[in-house]
Image (cartoon, rainbow, N blue to C red; front, top):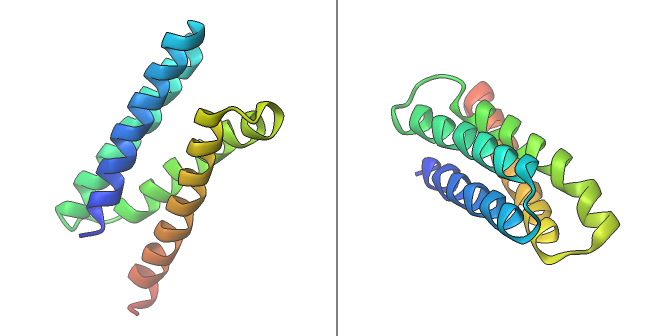
Amino acid sequence: MSHHPAYSMAGICAVGGAIGYAKGRSVPSLVAGASIGAVYWYAGERIRKNETYGHELALIASTLLLGAMGPKAMRTRAPVPLTMSILGTGSAAYYTKKAYEDRCGV
């Protein structure tokens, strides 16, 4: 069931990138949203198929999301960057736990 958050984050990132593009014609927002969303989707597929490194890929996507949106959220206090930063933090915590469980057999 841990693939559901990855799929949700994929959709949220794609929508967030589209919102960034629609509001400010920001092509980097569109590209980043689509790219990070694609990594989340691929991670979800790997987790669903019980293949290796799915949780780690989702953790990498969460870290990228937080690294991209965190500074912007702190600087602008805009709702979309703040929401994406909060979701990235929660997702990173969740997938850190899941990756640890995979490695340690907990």
